[in-house]
Length: 187
Image (cartoon, rainbow, N blue to C red; front, side, top):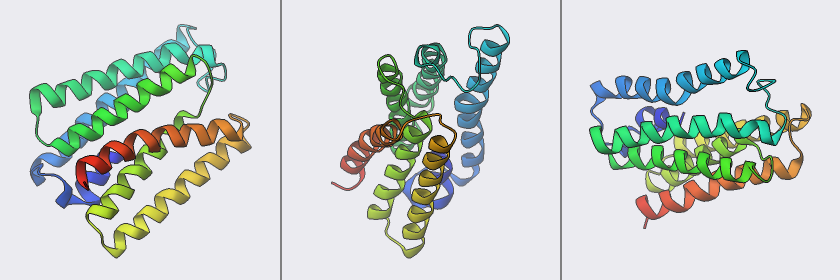
């Protein structure tokens, strides 16, 4: 979603040519969503994990490490092979770093991966709103904050997390992404 935001909500933020955006978005989606999803399905059917919900913090480690590896490969590919846009590479790198930080925290405490991702997305849109201010960006930011709140509420309602785990996940994703993106784009 962050890459789609960069390409289609704030197209002036990147120098990626218009004809390449769809291909790059598909590549990112394939390597950061579909391949990790297939890995998770493989782990489930081979009984490495007992549930897709990953209720136990210890059971989350192997899938999170695997997904972190896929994210590292994607970020590395974009940095060393494509190097098409600094902001795109920074966004992918920050998503990777956030996931690695989440994995490290998960060793000790089960925080919300959903909220970590949404915190990063809110941070990206917040920084883009400052850099490329327009009334639609403000409303887009509000929509993403509402989505984040709804997802956090759903995680609580489903008893997947405690409130502090949801807040910590959001704070982790937002803190990492906002601080770097703000210094990269605004200062």
